[in-house]
Image (tube, rainbow, N blue to C red; front, side, top):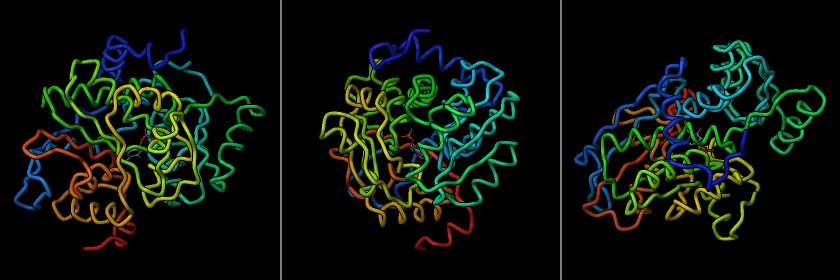
Length: 323
Ligand SMILES: Cc1ncc(COP(=O)(O)O)c(C=O)c1O
């Protein structure tokens, strides 16, 4: 099979992936998009905000979209290994159970223990190791135990599956002026940006948002190549050690800018959304945090779509956030 690159990710490839995601036996949901009621929160610049509620997606995050496409293109009798702080691992585990494939998730030992337990309930093995050793352990599983690696962000099939989110946005708001997306390794941002731009949204400005302590894509834009750093953030899903090479190439092509938010801004966004009835985890609310803190330029009077990308947060974790 031909390897997909930034240039071979065409509209047809993404549309085909969307069909796969829509028809997937994993039951991916076309999530609601709701207008943000501005009377509850004055925005720094008044604009028409639409929230795409991917926190209500099956498994609690957008990751299932990419996983649905990834699994549809893998042999059904494999033994797979991945690395994940939680959300990809959860979707991977759910899909593995559905397809009856064997799987293992290598997790940084900073991830909440509840995430490991949940993944294990799907019959998937979990190995918790210090963040610096995650890649080595995955390597060992591939070299010595003959497992096949499935990447949680740097994978063309995964990115093409995430693009289904962009097509759904256009069905509700066909001509968004601005779309704001949380960014970790960049798979989600790349997929959404590619689907919008290839669908003809030439004028739409697409922004990626990263925590300031985990800004690999931001630095990659500056250094003009995908780079890594010692990432740290309360938004663990947005803090992988490297920006993905394929996500980077797609983001350079289709994304206007990467903006940064602080840990305090992320925490306060979790609380703001919770107080309006929306349970969103730190990794899922960075895009919202950027908008309400005036980090997205020129939004006055514009149609702005913000993706709330995940809602996997427990009561215990929520207790750590301001009222
Ligand atoms: C809720 C949430 N949003 C966004 C992201 C970032 O996704 P990506 O690594 O594709 O940039 C993640 C990654 O785990 C996540 O869990």
